[in-house]
Length: 212
Image 1 (cartoon, rainbow, N blue to C red):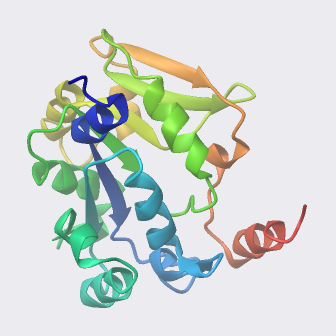
Image 2: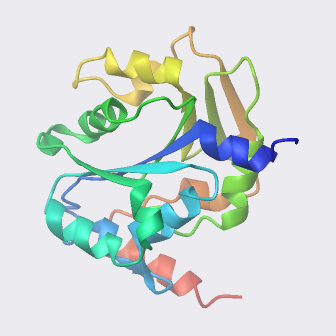
């Protein structure tokens, strides 16, 4: 019997969501801020499950609070495929959380690397994004109007390269490495450029919910 192609995609991708930061400029955890009746993190995790068999969530600041608030929204079956890992060194920066998350991912061909402040990406984005994967590439990144955005899909070869770098590096340092074969997907989703760091940006996002 022929394998369902969507099932194959789900088996090959693991989601990685960073929820470790203090969100200092926001004054509260971005992971738990509400968008369309769900916390940011919950919105994103549910969508990541559309293309990922498992999702790893890296926590740091107030880890038990973040974890307990998130799992309220998931069934016991979902929770078995949802792994929380604590990065005690989260204050050193986002790259350390990325590396810590990757250390806790096994047997995955692709990693869907996601920030926690992009809750408004629609379901269709994730399905279309995953469909762009092809042989011969290590890195898939969306762009909108010639601007690169997030999330990013990268393979286990790239993940190993990330783990070999020091915490003082950033993903940007690696993105220009000639050993990584990148593919850019020009898409019609402006949400890939979202970066919600202030209350003003959050208010702008919530207002958009009611704009038709």
